[in-house]
Image (spheres, one colour):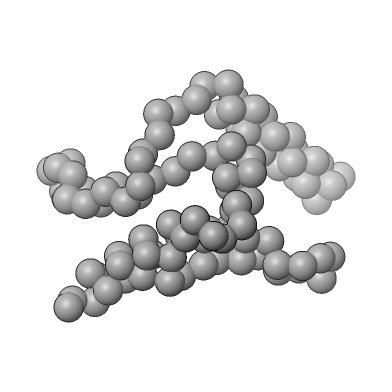
Length: 96
């Protein structure tokens, strides 16, 4: 088995889980693989759907993990407005 195939199997098989941990609370699941018994991840709770598409230089799809979701314009607009607001607050505090 190649290294890339092992990594793909680990990611899709639920062997790998990603958690965020701060001093403010317990572990927050960010990515839980495809394990149905795992608690919903932070992205799933926020309604973010994701998939991974691996393409070559010509743009041909080589491998797909999950179901790549279409862009939701409303969620996208809200997300980028929040990012812009946070950045403007940070930059205003730095350059004030």
